[in-house]
Length: 210
Image (cartoon, rainbow, N blue to C red; front, side, top):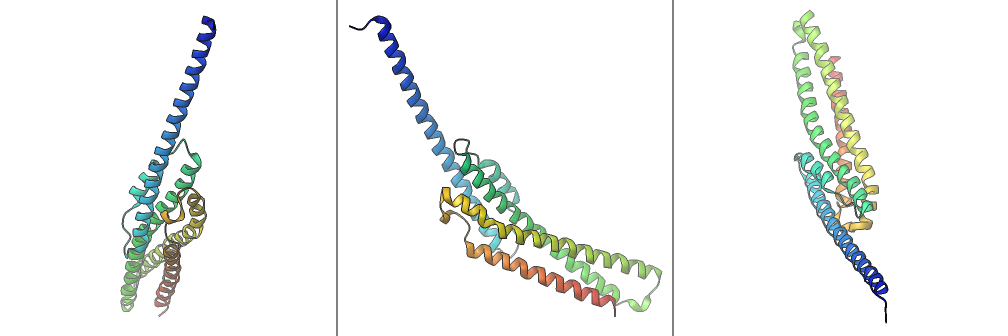
C-alpha cells in the first residue's frame, strides 16, 4: 500500500503532466491562430498589390499595407512572421513608389509644358525672361531627376520581390502570393516609363537650343 507521501508525490507529478499538456495545447492553439491571422494578412496584401500593379492609376494602398505590416505578428511562428513582413513591406513600397511616380509624372509634364510655352515667347527676351527660363529649366531637370529615382527604385523593388516570395511560399504556398507574370509585367512597364521619361527630358533640352 502506498504511503501518503508517495500518493501526494504521484498526484503532484500527474498535476504537472496535465498542466504541461494543457499549456502545450494552449501554445499550439495560439500558434495556429496566429498563423491563420498572418495568412489572412498575406492574402489581403496580395489582393491590394494586385490592384496596384493592374490599375491604370495608382490606388492609395500605402496606409492599408502599412497596417498589414503591423498586423503580421506571429510570436509563436517567428519565421512565418519574418517572411510575411518582408513580403508585405515590399508590397507597401511598390504602392508608395507607384503613387509617387504618378505624382512626379504629372509634375514633369507640367514643367515641360511650361518650358515649351516660355521658349515660344523667346522674341521678348530680356533679363526677366532669362531668369524665368533658368528657373523653369531647373524645375524640368529636378522633376525628371526625382521621377527617374522613383522609377529606378520601383524597378529594384520588383526585381528583389521574388526572394521574399520564395521565403514566404514555404509557409503559405505560392498560390497565395502575387502572380509572377503580373510582377514582371509591372517591372517592364517601369522600365518603359524610365526610357520614356528620359526621352521626354532630352526633347525638352533640345527646345532650349532653338
